[in-house]
Amino acid sequence: MTPMELRRKGLAALRKKLGYVGMVRFLNQTDAGSGDYTKERHQ
Image (cartoon, rainbow, N blue to C red; front, side):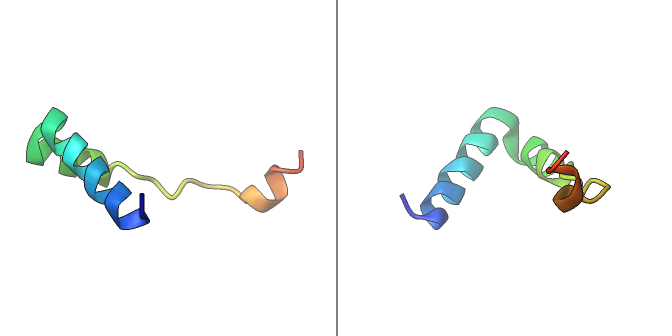
């Protein structure tokens, strides 16, 4: 499965379970986070 196919199927699954509004709300919840992963991963 190509990355585009995976994305298409994933979005379709979200839309099916959550509806369009729920899917958009879910996708908007992504957070960049905080801290420095590169330094913290070694700890």
